[in-house]
Image (cartoon, rainbow, N blue to C red; front, side, top):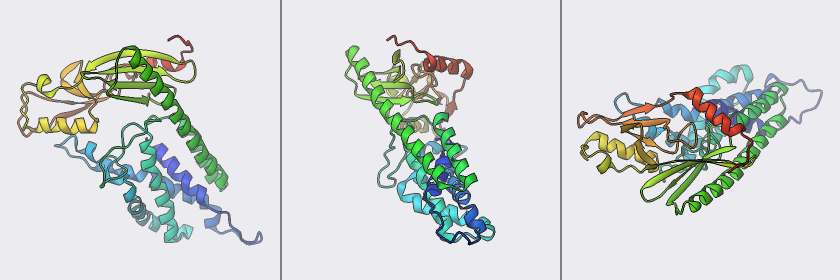
Length: 351
């Protein structure tokens, strides 16, 4: 998820765990007690965002290194106590004197915030190594977009009100909203998968694999990708309100020997194809617009199109030790958003 959402959920959990003071009403509240929900939220927010510091692991010569380490060890469940402790060590010196926090409190707030990060990332489609180093599978529930304002904005408002009013009830309402929305995403996912399966059956296909994921910033329009022996089929469907199928297109699966007959197997570019294919879980194909580019067909701004958000590009004249180039593609973003917006707002139920 985006850093703001990670921070808001990271703040909500430690805020929600604070118990109201049982001291006598006549007792003068301390500075800490007056701002305890704010402090818990701020430390939890820092912890909630911290796991994404793995983006600092990169190489100027190896453009795929960040793909291997993002959502890896910093996102592992076994790393949560250590991650929270490290963040607490860095943060405690700043807050302990003015706010009279004990170290265990700082550790608890930061660790609770840190604990939300990987689980929230798992609800998106990129995949998270929850069980690293015992298992390098990238777990993904694919029930929410990596950016979704309808999830983030209400959650952020609940966290903010909880901090301003020093009242844990609002934070708990924020957690409840997060769970309700993720539950709605799961329900939409099941419906989208059922529609995608029926569509494949109508075409006479028996998919080897079938995945559905929400399109950008919503859980109403979904992208489906299913694999047959030789091809990937990409479609979109609106689920729930005014359901509709938006049939898309297909593309041949990547065949390295046929698509790159000039590429030698012992070169770095060949090794990088293997790395990119592993990251993409095998959903790779040649870019229809560029025969030297390999794309992950699961990702596009318009859900029923093959229009990659990122790719790797090979060069026939590259030296054996040279890496591929990693490219991002954001061309015609306004036009593509218009196409997605039409799918989101169209009320016709035609199939």
